[in-house]
Image 1 (tube, helix red, strand yellow):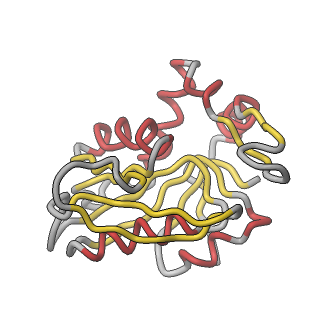
Image 2 (cartoon, rainbow, N blue to C red):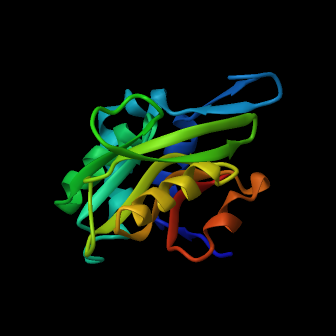
Image 3 (cartoon, one colour):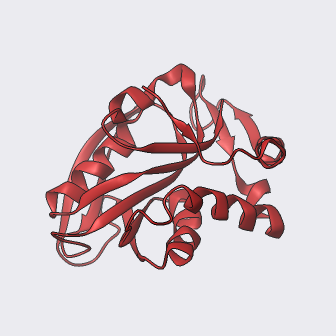
Length: 183
């Protein structure tokens, strides 16, 4: 499985890596959490990051950007604006009003369930899915299935970082997957 780097600017990648804080044993013992809030607090770096996350998909005909709760919302909304696309929130179970579709998925430390509005997109929609980190691929795979369940097609995925050791990219091998960092 090949993952394309979204930016060839090694200086940007280094600045992004320096801004990500590693938090051991969160949310459970044994998990190393990658905290992107320091990156979000730097206005210039935040803007450069979302520009780079969108750049690989400019011209791909993206009609919607789906952001995965919750950091995917923060990164996905500006990516949607850059691409002049609509935004779709993909949320944890019970957080969306109205009629939804749902998918259960595995995490590196358990299981969870995601939902999306049934009318968020439909046939002919070209959806880019955005999140901060690709770990095991469970959340990303479930998100792709949600988009497909309502008739949309997944144009690709744009991640801030991919954790190579957890091999989540293998679950997305049929999609165009781009990232700023490989950790």
